[in-house]
Length: 72
Image 1 (tube, rainbow, N blue to C red):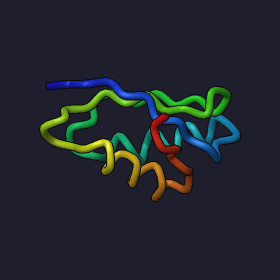
Image 2: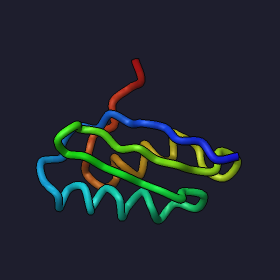
Image 3: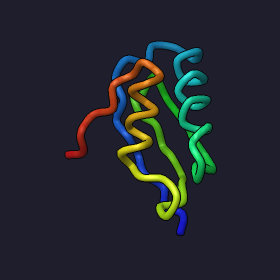
Image 4: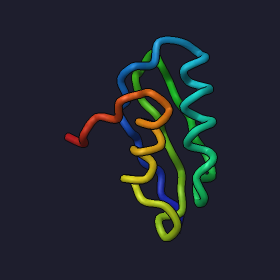
């Protein structure tokens, strides 16, 4: 089942950062759509929850050089 989740992300400062994050997260199996905004400091990801976990997505964000923030 596909779900869409918003991740608060710090460290993005430009469109290049957005592209870098989108590229990293898009490589994960089960991820179908990634939208990132350096202005909102967020990423919205649509993924198959049976294939990939929010923790794996957060790890991909971290590996790309950005900081996913804990949910509030």
